[in-house]
Length: 137
Image (cartoon, rainbow, N blue to C red; front, side):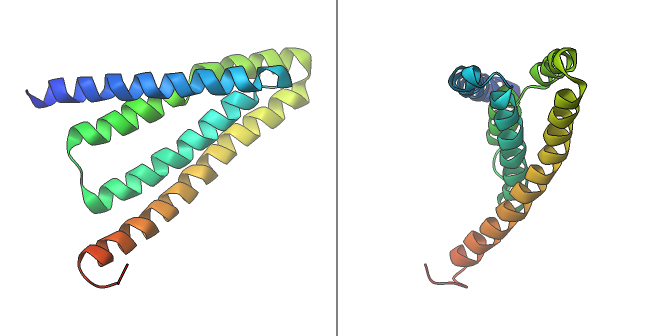
């Protein structure tokens, strides 16, 4: 099987899992009347992608693993289009609700990605040292 085919299959599987979890989060939080599911998805997905990126830098997995988890899972789980639509809907109700939502989503996404990256780097380096015999598990 060639690399492109492996990547497409991995993205498809990861995307199916990510979108399923996104749907579940939206259904579970639907009654809040606020797009809480979208905030959780985008912040959680930002954290996870930051973590995975740091992990991948250290461990260098196969390309299909990176694309399956990054593009597929995280891409399917997070959602820019829903963020944009929710922002417009909240703006129609009250401008401050929309502003708070946008600030939490954008600033929070960057903070979560950074936190995920820091944690992913720390855990990956510790795991690497353990593999090399530097630390006892």
